Amino acid sequence: MEDLHPEVVLAMAAQAPDGIVIIDGEGLIRYWNQGAERIFGFPAAEVDGRSLDVIIPEKHRKRHWDGFQAAMARGTSRYGDADLLNVPALTADGRRISIEFSVVMLPAADGGMYCGAVIRDVTARRERERELMRRRAEAAV
Image 1 (tube, one colour):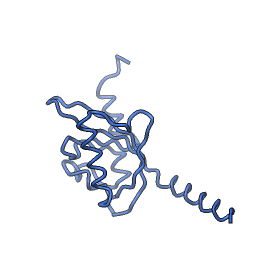
Image 2: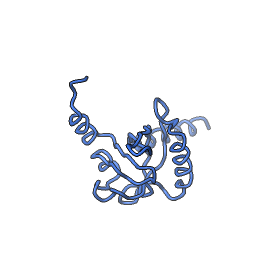
Image 3: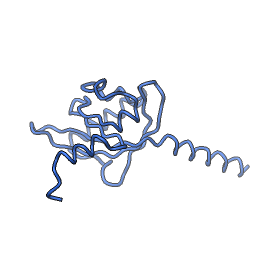
Image 4: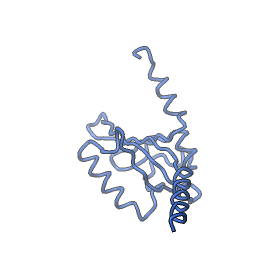
C-alpha cells in the first residue's frame, strides 16, 4: 500500500457513497463529501464552516454536544471500531432520516482535535424493521 498516493485516498473520500463529515473542535463543518451531499441534501459549499446543528434535530442537540465535548476532551470515542451510533438527523428540506455512523478522532497540527464520521442513511432499513415489529405484535394478539 505504500505506493498508494494521497490523492487517490482523497479522491476515494470525496466520492464515497457514504457520507464523510469532519468537524473541528468548535463543532464547525470542515469537510463534507459527495455522500454527505446526497444523504442530507446540502451542497458542501452551503455547510462549510457552519455548525453541525444544521443536521441535528433540536431536541437531540444538548445530548449530542455533551457527548462531543466529552469525546474531544478524552481524544477518543466509543463509536469507532465496531460500535455504530444510530440517531435521527435532518435533511436540507427538513425531513427526518435515520443515520448510523462511526467516529474517528483526528489530531490537528495545532494540538487540537477534529472529529470525523462515516455516515450511512438507514431510514429504509429502520422503517422495514418497525413494520416487521408491528406485524409481529399484531400476530401475537
